[in-house]
Length: 462
Ligand SMILES: C[S@@+](CC[C@H](N)C(=O)[O-])C[C@H]1O[C@@H](n2cnc3c(N)ncnc32)[C@H](O)[C@@H]1O
Image (tube, rainbow, N blue to C red; front, side, top):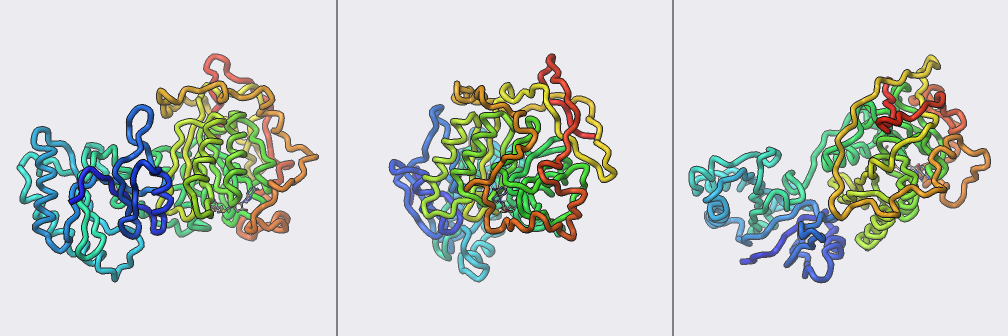
């Protein structure tokens, strides 16, 4: 029996990254493919358990049992539930999974399938009535406990009961299985959809987003489909057609782009060196160019945890707050990061707001002012420090007009996917006449004043 230890699911071959992330004091080790155990879990300054980027799911271990022994499994699981919930029954959910990396013919997968219903029935039969009645689905807002059974092999199972807030996901095994949009130009859009589910917030109607590294257009499509407007920046071609009222493509390097105003979202999926992308996003933070961030960092290196730490440090120093990082189910050698800027730093001064040009060439009319949205509150340790203030040099509007001198340097080189000659060749589907612009052609509206009473950003929807 193993007790007072944690078990984690990772992506297959991600065990080393998680062990590195847990740190030497956690005594972490690989137990099986895609499974790591540790004696402890790192806590933050306020003593709450810290999030983990390289784990998909966490469970507080109760028992390690032979999987074929349904009776013992059910007895131990029911005992843990009865003991924990006898006095105060609270919502609990049952999840039975096999860690990733095993194919459908693997004995562990077949054992888990065969166990699912008999085990559930036997557990329920051994619970006191009030505890049995407290069972809910894991996605139910009332769920407080996750009873998890992980079948590692035909005869090797881990059972654990975990407070829902300490589990990393309410999805079985932390796996978000999403349906791919048949019109999506790539599977990349699934990464953004999963990220939005994970953080519980994403681009929505009326929001204005920049999408750095946007080609072939998957993320932009997700944001546009959610009602947002998107300025896509990528030297490569966008391979789908999106409504030009809400989408525009600027064919240039993201290192040369400056937004015309503070945007609602900075989306970034650039295939480029993580530290350089972090520096670019840091610039967006210092200059208060976007309220919220979802960025996917490419981490092809062997030791990803250390690189991620460096990336997060760069972002934090630039004023990005509430940083959360996770290697999501649809991420490969990548990690998705969410963050937001202190709203008081993202007020806009008088500037030239970006206007989308409709196909007829008319500018869209700004919509009536929106009520401020609620956004995540800073935690005690996340108060904006001196470094979070936009620096004096950071003039968000100085760059609204692309500089003619802007010369591509080493950083502006597009990745292999970004073929420079593609810049001039319009894609057949994409009708670039309407959608694709160079930054010189990007249309900007007339100068408008900031509402000094509310200091709120003007609403941009038409
Ligand atoms: C993984 S793909 C993005 C996929 C996209 N998010 C989607 O959903 O379709 C990476 C993109 O980064 C772009 N990229 C690489 N370097 C860039 C740079 N300096 N500026 C802008 N885009 C860049 C590449 O051209 C490529 O299209």
